Length: 404
Image 1 (tube, rainbow, N blue to C red):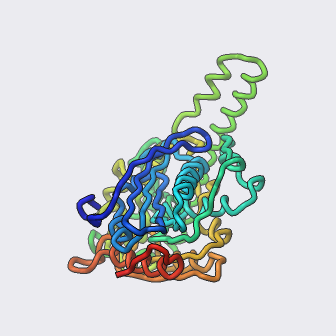
Image 2 (image 1 turned 45 degrees about the vertical axis):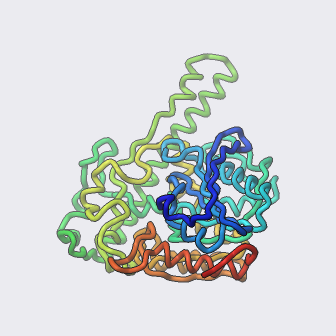
Image 3 (image 1 turned 90 degrees about the vertical axis):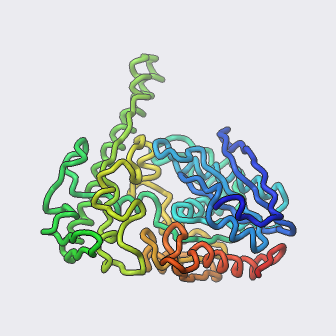
């Protein structure tokens, strides 16, 4: 959202923060007169500096903090446990400024990140995680991790790992050949139920089950590669420590990268009868998944073994919304977009039911995953969601909140 669309009285300041482990992260603080409640927007991999909710919340009397992670825009080294330290630096900063209330707003992949943070922040320091799944030390036990006063989830997806497992193409035969295809699993094979776009495809229940089992199996195969590389590197480091041989030191660093082809193949993007809602034909990446699936865009396409295990593996990642939600004991609002292509109705219902606090609200508004209008001429999903958020925040943290 362009700065010109912000309220005239908005004061914007840029800040550079140092995390507990010495990394540098950046954020923008936007404040309107009288605001004592601040909304905290962060995503582990996307730039939220000009997020569509920023003007919506400012116009209703709330301050907004948008922050980037140290791995912003870089899937290659995204470790979610480190992203928690990045988020912690933001929470410490906002509390030190004196805001009366801090509300975490997680949009899309920001929701599992916020839930993961609140899970760890709610634990005694000694009970927090102290390493990534791959074994990299992360000093969460010694970090200051102030909790948020409330959580808002906007179009939340289940977590990068679970999302990728839904979207990865299991018909790929050779991980080194992006064009290799097993015809009996090919989602774009008419014999399996595919129809020429934009006509909705129709996959049989049997094909859907085989496809999803094969998706899980492909993730497990990539997991095996990641675990092998991490283990080999760890063993080489131990040998170097014991014997000082530089060949072992080099081997400990030569973990390589994992290339993952074809990650835009969720059957629901082309078969609108599966988990139906108001979504249009197509995926998060475009209107023709049968083409974008073969392009360079997609989740987790290039990653280190450590980042794969921390973020992209549905089996190893801890940043999973369904796993973290039962430990998030704060008032919560879940805003479901009825045309979402990543958070489906059953997802939204399940996430809301998993939250343990007695004050949990689940609302639905028309819109698409990134906050666009559901159809031309309608109000944007971001505007409708902003109104719901403002009323919810104002009823619970009223100081400084004005709802027109």
